[in-house]
Length: 392
Image (cartoon, rainbow, N blue to C red):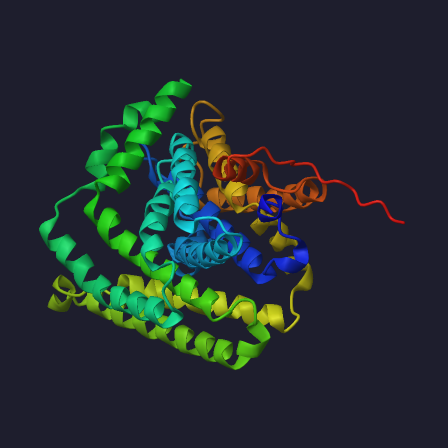
């Protein structure tokens, strides 16, 4: 019985669009993480560059914060799927998932040693909070999510008013380690950076976590109604979601720009920046789903699904690659290159990972980090190499 629980899902049992969306989100994560290196370090003057200006806007409107919010929705979806599967097999879902989140914390610590923008720790923490809702209905999860998203602008404004936390000042404390040629210094710098810039930063520790959790509940509710599993049945609702969220993204963006440019006092009490992010993310997500069920971009989506099946491995590898590319333990490029260079580096790493993921999954059951995490979660050694079926 237990062996049935831990077997890898066959392709026909997976929800392919979820893997595709995970892969798309990883592209945004790679771009966001890599361009961060452009902004960190000693001041460097860059010549005016139209391509970089355009890519800055592309990142700002289509990727920045849209990727981790999308991944949060997919995390909530995956949580609901896993809890159902574990409960159906007779295992205690709370104990199992708690153990799984513990090992995700361990992986987060390792990842944080390579990148001070780690998000795994946040998912591990919020995953434990999500256990409070594991038996909730889709309606309860959805309503709670909407309530959280409604209060976010007020929380963000309040924290801006009462907190005087300065990211740049905190980053300056670890900048000497940033330029070290020693691996241990790099690990210490990244771990301290994770702590200073995220764990004790009020805006991140409170506002970002509220947004993440709200997105997880949306994903949980989506799984409860079978949204991603029955996309063709929801085509009408999908189109409606696309157009409404797109209109919302445009309207919220315009209103926010007007409010900021005129320094309206409203922003002291109400900062709707995450409404812009979430409406844009939902329009992108629903647009991808719409294209998928319409049979468009088949070749592109085919490649993405392999990438998405190894989300954890590819995410961590992206961060290790960035350390080699930009710090003195590797090529030491830091922020010396034009903005477009960091976008290009992220895209090239992403494309390479698509091909590597496809090759890997043709030979192995899981991505290497997924395999380790799965074994630690189940407390049992699992075969990683695929067994070729012998045709009669």
